View 1 (cartoon, rainbow, N blue to C red):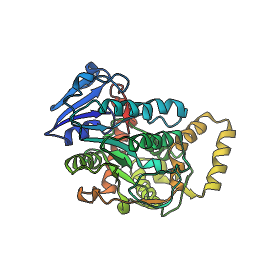
View 2 (view 1 turned 120 degrees about the vertical axis):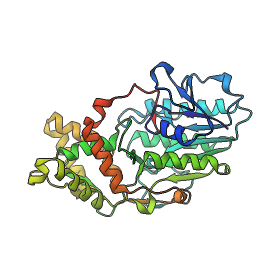
View 3 (view 1 turned 30 degrees about the vertical axis):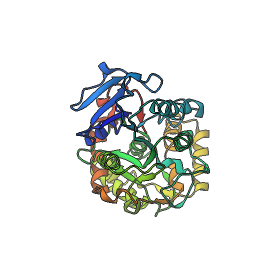
View 4 (view 1 turned 180 degrees about the horizontal axis):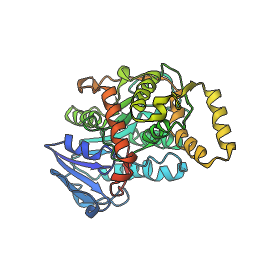
Length: 346
């Protein structure tokens, strides 16, 4: 089977390509010379604005993983990649005579402020969004579902890193938040003690994508690639992180830094306002990083996972420890910066 994969240089791209073997994977990259080759993967130069039309007759499956995850940029900028880029890829897909599946990788962040149990189904009515990234990915889903092509959507929860070695190809909002927590610069977190924090590993996400590709096509299907009922509670995750920090940081071990309080929305909003008015540039930067991720913790929900039960589940404590250890050893990714990608992962 010939599979066109976008987002190869993102967090999940290489692992997805690896799990899709023994299929023929055609990976779309902006500059082939800047991307490390990978066995079994053919690198195609191009992007969502310049798709290689010559391969259209060969493509049987498209896995669309490319997206911009820049949380703090205007919605218009995000739409150019996440919505308009998806539209162009769908137009290209219509020229592929052998195409029998278009798999769009989305994010569980499209749920916005929804709480409670979230089924694996289209979100026809827009919720209230925490940031513009969520909105752009929701809009992309609407474009995909409106297509007459055999489309499916897989919503991924937070991909923390590799369960094998903890590696993170491109640190994001979760990892920046971990850094500020470790430094003791986030005194409180919004949410509830029993709010699930749905983390998945890179391998789990890729294995779920590969399993979905191997399954029979079900046009219009939406699945959640997430931990579901197995996600740790916010209080559990915080206490476990504190135990890791105590082992590696004297300030934590001595009690100079303590586990952040869990605050309600009103209290956290007061904290944000005080940070903005403080004039402390470092404190403001911490809050800006946190604002792209932490407010989502206020919306406690459990995601339906009818599909991924067949994928071996990782241990979230082992995953968390390995990711933290890798981040600490690699200065949160700064010492192992990879070449700039065409797009970040979805």
